[in-house]
Image (cartoon, rainbow, N blue to C red):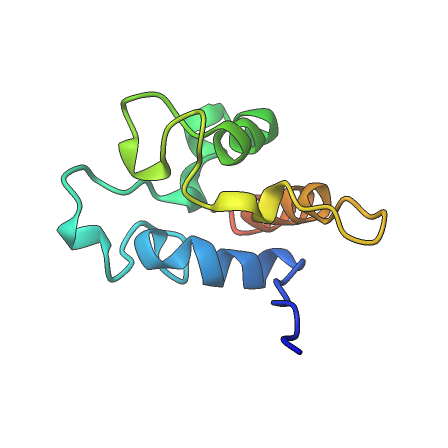
Length: 114
């Protein structure tokens, strides 16, 4: 019998597995795929800096959950973000998708440059 895939719930592992390819391990937008993309990959360590010193938690949560507009097509459409079901997964009466979403949001907040 096949074992279910175990997907991480901690923010740093989620980032490494799903975001670092484009955004880089340090979140600065220099991942190995970034050079192949048409647009510049945002530096996620400067989200607070670009938002008057406040981490834009709601914007980050919405971008992860719903995708983005046509300005960032790499994230997928609003109907189907590229990350697939990991942020919408419910197992054993636990909303692990919500847990992952909150944890990646906290992780991104933790890597902000001062």
